Image (cartoon, rainbow, N blue to C red; front, side, top):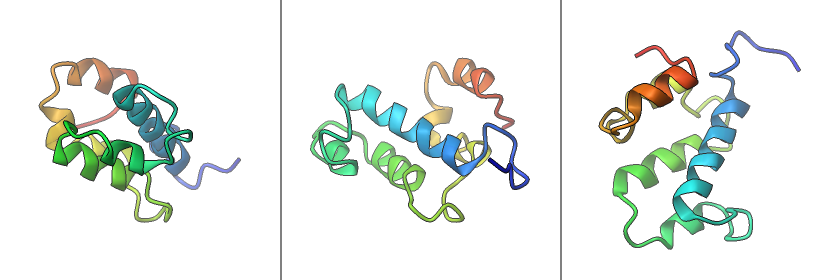
Amino acid sequence: MQNHGHSNNTRPEAVWSFGMTLLNAYVGDTVFRLRGIRALNSVAHAKKDLKEITTKILEKNTYARPDMNQLFRYPWFRDSPCFERIRKLVHVQT
């Protein structure tokens, strides 16, 4: 698979995988079983900014999808108590 100028953690498919993992963890079930982004919409207590971020992460157009560096600038990530730990795990520069 070609890199297309992206580092491993910013490649569009890595961002999409991260989004699916995030959504699965938040919803507590397999997203494919719950029909994708509708799974998050069905969670009444999901924050609006989490829905916004997840929608952008799972964007089908890879050119419109944010990379990890852009993603971690969103308040939902920056304001997270585990932001620094996650940032270091995925090697994001903020």
